[in-house]
Length: 411
Ligand SMILES: Cc1cc2nc3c(=O)[nH]c(=O)nc-3n(C[C@H](O)[C@H](O)[C@H](O)COP(=O)(O)O)c2cc1C
Image (cartoon, rainbow, N blue to C red; front, side):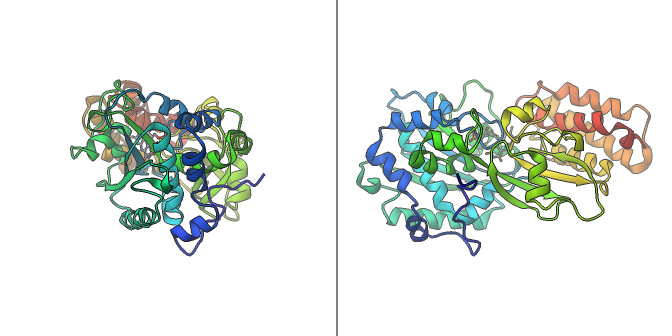
């Protein structure tokens, strides 16, 4: 079985047009779903495939769609999360840049399964070029009958709109995304109710990541067993691993879910520069707990990373070699979260800014003996006590850094 599926036909020269996509089998999954399957069959296939969300939380996609109340006559919405703000992550951009129709085909499939007729793609404001290309792809798809009224003559209709965000990390959080999309300040909503029951404009809403949806055409065309065969029994398919930092060949690598972190770094990303040794790896975007060199024989899937005390998150792998100071890493991490905290709840607003102030003073030569303990106490006070998961995302990497690199940070 080929290891690559999502990226197998990517053209380095630029995004594939409708014609080049369709000529290599593109839109066959959507055609099959619309012509040969009921919405319940599509949902059943995706549930059986154990497709877990690629946006960070790893929630099974089919299960999430199942929470949408089918009986209600009210409109339902799809929001595609193309905010991709997690540092160290650049795989959704890779899909949008090379194959916007792969995403659009996935959008048709989920919308058909759930009974959605209006979808929004929320694109981070900085990705203007990608938003423009996506709009071109949507126009092309409409003109070819793959979107809009009566898709491929099936009677099913779907409108897709691109919405540009303004570039805030918190707007990647699904409820802050909804607020932003409705025109309000991008701050999270209290959950429950979850978007499946009260989402965009108060209606039932599915929110999925770009890569999650890009997997749907393959699942429908080749079936759940094929998809499971690519990955792990409870975590099917391949993943797009973004690899950056101290490696010879940084980039996006499509490999089976469950590939070992060591293999990704040393076999696929070319290992470290000559003479350098590995110091640490952040395995799943900046919000995931850092791992030591002795911990990288871990399989890159949701459950294995959790068992190792970290998380796969967005699968953004940041490699750190012995030339990098952990004081610099702590500085960057705390600067990012203090800057991006939306300020809505006190533990996060105050906690991230106090941690930041202490780190700046420490790194400016004014370190006090109990600084790291003070930072750890502040991080512990945020963990599990903030309005949204941002507080955990800010606290966990700091606690892991202190836990594993205390001696260096104190030096
Ligand atoms: C602070 C924060 C930032 C997030 N940023 C993103 C993001 O940029 N892209 C994304 O797909 N999910 C992001 N998420 C996760 C979303 O809230 C949500 O779980 C995801 O879009 C659901 O899609 P999935 O089930 O397909 O993964 C973020 C979550 C948090 C707490």
